[in-house]
Length: 234
Ligand code: CTP
Ligand code: MG
Image (cartoon, rainbow, N blue to C red):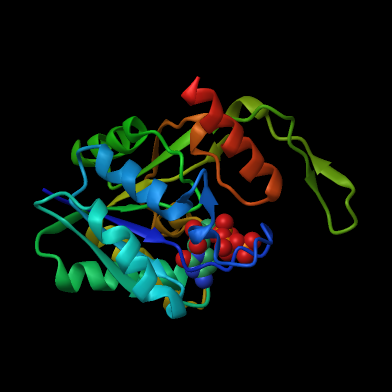
């Protein structure tokens, strides 16, 4: 059972506004991407990681992440695409072509740098148990409203039935490839790979996520991550 993790890391980090790709932004001296890749390997389930890097940063990303791989694995770096879904598709195509025995694929945002290795393990275990698509989720704390184009409320979904979605998302490799091929031909992008698999009619199951797996999008999120790190140092 070969588990390969794809890490889309080619975004520009515009909302963070740090003046460099978000994946390379350091928290306590360690880039977010390095933390994310380390967490994947620390799960003990992943031997190969394929990073989709900003095209102009492929060399620096390779240098920084190569030492993270275990002796029986490797970090591979490809140039990412214009949209996140392009980056995932490029990394997936590379993995299926170059890494023998790729049967389970995780997709994990570099921006979720503090995801506990136990969450990675739970996702892999659920895919290995026979679920073709697995996502880590959390309950929704706030009430959520659906609004129309004018911002007028049209519905209040039952909060108990809602979940927020994290990564890594885990897939049977062939199912994820089919989902991306269908979406690509339809001209559809997605920030959520499981959403593409849903469109195939394949059931997507959930496992518990973790608050530390928050996505770092804004300066506020980065400040929360820094505070978390200080907290764990005691
Ligand atoms: N990503 C990617 N390729 C893209 C766009 C995004 O690989 N063309 C990656 C990002 O690097 C990130 C993840 O997808 O790890 C989630 O995207 P997001 O949080 O939106 O990051 P950015 O696109 O970098 O941020 P922003 O949208 O604020 O520019
Ligand atoms: Mg983005």
